[in-house]
Each structure stands twice: as structure tokens, then as C-alpha cells.
Image (tube, rainbow, N blue to C red):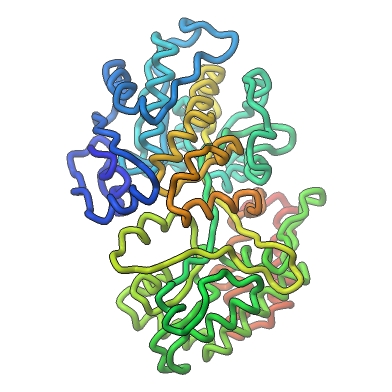
Length: 485
């Protein structure tokens, strides 16, 4: 499989691990790869259940050496004979995944450094649910990927084990990570995962629409300036819109993002309580409601969306019926693939009086499941699949994956890519995470679910302040009661 197919397959959801189905390389993909600064990588073979035998590892080293810059040696204090047997790794996907090439390279490095060990990388559908079952049965993999923002809830259920004792002797440091990223894996003096990928969010803007309206491309400094620009690029009237400038909800930004842009916050870690009723979060929701009313109301906007061939905000943006939308680096490949789409990105504009931009991030970590037969060996493998070497390979082949390590974010490679990509990397120091609490699913539901505070306020069923106050009380009640659902 060519590297172009790996990246394109990730975006299109094709190319199952070990399967025979392949997506032909899309012509637009080469344009994306030129923007990203990625050269040809060559093919990497796979079998259905066992991706990496010793022979495959050897070929992977040869294929990907150009991306590696040299593999790190065995963990300090260990010899090549200190790890033996088979280690099973459950990744977050297969060959089409944006981290696939980095997994292949670093597993090859691991097996080179520990030749008596063998790693099986096995794609697992419904991975998190199956991990729960495997842990309960006493047959977990040695290492598994886990969505970082759900680790707090998972560790409370005993799904993964504390790896802090191994971390302390590994030479790794907490300060090497983005601080907000570390907060998702370190809890109550215990470490439950090694982060390896993340993202940030920016405003995707149709540059052609700006030019048609006689507007500059310069990013607005405040949310008020942004509002004025979006009014200028909107075409039509409520009930008969031809094009909307911006829709503040229903995207990969959520009320979380608006609260931070208004200077608010969502969690008090010392008190272990959510702060949905922060006055600045309330102001953010009031702003959203005002924008909805300006567009004719929530139902009018939703009617416009549903009348389009595809109603997702990113789809509307690509079709030219929406001038701007906020989304993550996960959309970069798709944006580059759309021919004749003239777009730029802006940092999310803060509300007046807020000194700087804010964004937020998600991402993944490698965890050692409870019951793993050799946790020290598992940690060593997890380290190889999370370290700077891994993340620098992922930088070049990741299709939207950003590094969690500060050193990998400072990789000179980023100076060679399309400036739009570099802007997402530059926002890493200004990012936040969703509250790392056991009750995260309750919070999500109460924030912007079908009956969440944002939804009720936008529909006019409740005013923003009481909607957030009542939701806040319900989440904090769940925290006090120790409920996760």
C-alpha cells in the first residue's frame, strides 16, 4: 500500500487492516502531501491478524528509515534479552489510520532492540468495549490505545493500570508534554497513559467569499470583528438564505470552545466540580442565542442545513453555502482534497476584553490494561509508540495528527509544510481539554445533548443562565454521588 493510499484511506474510511480492499490514490491527495511536505514512503505489507513478524519488521526499517532519523536504543538499564515473547497491541485503527506508519516504524525499532520479542498489532472493532470484556476475562492486550478524554472514567472502572513507577525510571518527564494533555492521563498521583497524538481547532474560512465581499484576509482580533465579517458574507434573508456566513453550533467546537473564548472555564480541579455556570460561559451562550435569533432562529438555520444535499457544517463549507466553520486538524486532508476550494484558517477570535485566542484538543494515549502479564515490558512498548521518535514520524505521515510532546511540536519539519498546517501547530500552547472527570458523559449530555443547556437555550426553551445553572447542578450532584451515568 502506498503512503498516499494510507493517508487517503484514513479520510475515506477504507483500507481495513489486513484486508484486500484498497482505495486508489486520489489525485488530490498528492496536492495535500505536497502541502504537508511528505515524500514517497513506499509500501508496507500486512497480514490479517499479525502485522509485524520479524521479517516484516526488517522491511519496515528499510522502507521508513528516511522518516526516522535513527531509532532510539533499548530502554535505559535493559539488555536486548530483557524482553521476550509476544506482545499484543491494539491500535486505534488499521492501515488507513494517520498514525499507522509511525506504529510500523517504531514497532520495527522495538523488535530490533529486543529481538527475542514479537509484537502483534491487531485492529479491533469496538476496541474500548472489547477491552472492558478482555480485562474482565483476564485476557487483555499488552498495550491498547484509548481516547484520552475518557481515561478518567475508564480508570475508575479499573480498565487500565498505574504506570507511574515505570515512568519514573524511563527518563521521560511530565514537563515534556503539553500540560493540558498531561492532565488527561495523570490523576490522583497515578499515571494511566502515554499520550501520542492530539489536534487543535481553528476557523476554516472561504477566502473567495471574503474577496467577493471586498474584505481583507487578515484574521479578526475579536469576536465582534468576526461577527461583522460573517454578516458581510451572508447572502439572503431569514427563511430564504442562499449562504450563511457562520453557524455557531453543530460543529466540532461546541460550547466548550465559546466559553474559553469568553474567558470562562468548565472545571475547578481543586474542588472537583464543574463550573458550567461561570458567568463568562453564560455570556458565551447568550452570544450564541443572539446569533441564532439574528439568523431567524434555531429552527430556521436548521431548516437551511437540512435543505442542503449534506447538512454537516464541513460539508456546507466545502459546497460554498457556508463561509466559515470551526473544526480540527482532522479536516485538513478533506479540505486539501476539494479542488477549487480557496480557503484559509484563522485563530478562533476571543470575545472583547479577552487577551488572546483559545482552542481545545482531543487525542489518544497508549495504556497498559489491567491484567497485562508483563506490565514493565508493556510500558516499554508503549513508550516506543509514544516517544519523540514516534511523534516525529507521525508528524510527517499523520494526516492531521499533531504531537503531544513539546520537542516534536518544535520539529523544524513544521517550517517546511503549508503555512495553514503550521498555524494549527502554533496553537498548541493555547489549548484546553474537556474536564478530565469520571462524569464526562453526563457533562457532554448536559452541555449540548438533545436536552442539554445549549440546545434548550438555542431553541428558546430556557434562558441561558438557568439552563447552565441547572445543568451544572446535575453534573455536580453526579460527582458527589460518584455516579458515571
